[in-house]
Image 1 (tube, rainbow, N blue to C red):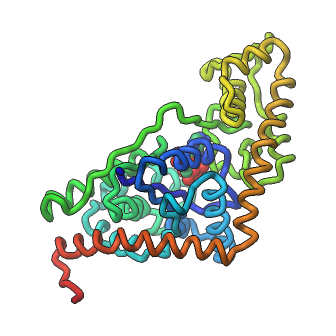
Image 2: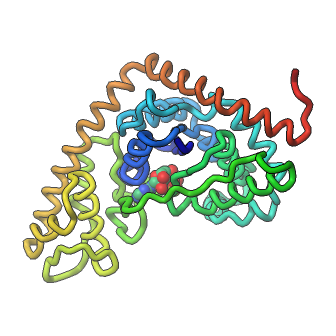
Image 3: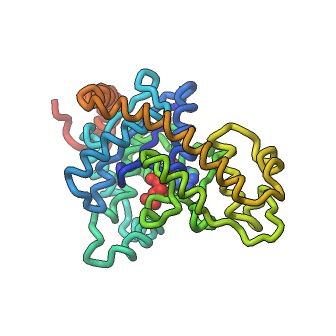
Length: 335
Ligand code: ATP
Ligand code: MG
């Protein structure tokens, strides 16, 4: 089966509905016919200097959400990035193959560093895409499920893999492909439906957090920005009606119902009816999700054991790949 690698950062208290629909549900599906590795990328989170106690908590919470979202540690390798030291080791090799200007062209770095200011911008934030390339190349990964915002980083990863093969001989690295899943629900911010729902909008009220009080989520749905349209027309039309279209996307995703069928049911009745029923549907989705996550969080020793098993299995894949690269780079065998 083709090998697939994906990870999310343990930033913030929980993942959001966009992460669930855009990533987790896909991951759960992919494990059937792929050799899947799913990682909580805690080393990446260090680029923004989280509080140590909070980071520890977030890492477990993120792993619990992967499990609650259907990642099955029997069928996939579920682990924490920092438990497999080979990620950091390969990142060093790759950083010595990455041009300074090349890294400087990454738009996510430009955006994030502009927000942090020169003093708040760490070297780690700059080399983040190199660590991401290491995450992927370390497992001879064939496929990487990526959202739009990571596409440029995957391109860098592919460039690096090709460069290694040119400089150190064919077969040094596997060149990964983007795995594009069609019909992935892209969820927009509830308060700003032309922007995507994102962790970085944490200040806003337009995000549905997977572990928040479902009452709050219901409230966020009810106060979602809708479109000024006298006719109360409900139809899926993201250009003309971004707010309503986003609510239809969410409605469809959490209930499995067809968007157009939902639209027909509420068309002309006023947005309030749609919002009330959607709020109920979101609560009905969140409650069992949270109950599942809670079973993992209530037994941290067991959760840590699952993660330790995953790390051991990940290391078995990673070590020979890294040894091959060390050898190609001309580092002496450690004997
Ligand atoms: P940040 O603001 O830090 O970029 P984010 O909320 O965009 O955070 P990521 O960690 O970048 O989250 O993304 C994790 C995964 O979730 C990726 O696969 C990404 O494509 C997916 N994802 C993120 N936001 C959405 C969204 N609004 N709709 C669908 N998928 C999403
Ligand atoms: Mg993002």
